[in-house]
Image 1 (cartoon, rainbow, N blue to C red):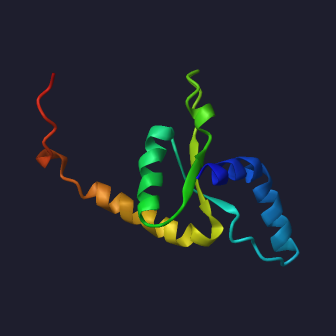
Image 2 (cartoon, rainbow, N blue to C red; image 1 turned 90 degrees about the vertical axis):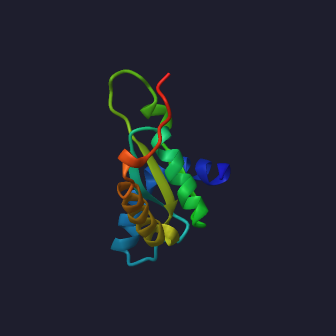
Amino acid sequence: MATIARWCQAKIFAIDLTRANRRENHMSIDPNDPEVLTSVRNDLEAAPLIAALAGLGIEATQTGSFTADFRAEVPGEVRVLVRHEDFARAKAALEKIGEDRSAIDWSQVDMGEPE
C-alpha cells in the first residue's frame, strides 16, 4: 500500500495533462493510473472508506492529508485514489457503502451511557 501511495503522490499532478494528451492522440489510458474516486474532509473520513474498499479487493490510497490536517481555518480535502482499472467497481462500491450508511436507524443504536 505504501508503494502505491508514493507512486500516486508523485504522479497525481501530471495525470490530467497526460490523460488529455492521450485522448487527443487517441492513445489508451494506463489501467494502473490513479483515479480520484472521491474527496473527503480529512483522513478520519478517508480511512474507513479505504478499509471498506480493501475488504472488496480494491486497493485504494489517500493523498492530501497533510494539507487537510493543517489547522489554519483553510478548507482542505483528502482524495481517495484507486487504479483506473478498478474505478468503475470502486464507484459502485462507494454508492453501495453510502446506501448502507443511510439505512442505519440511529435511534435504534445503543451508544452507551454518557460519561
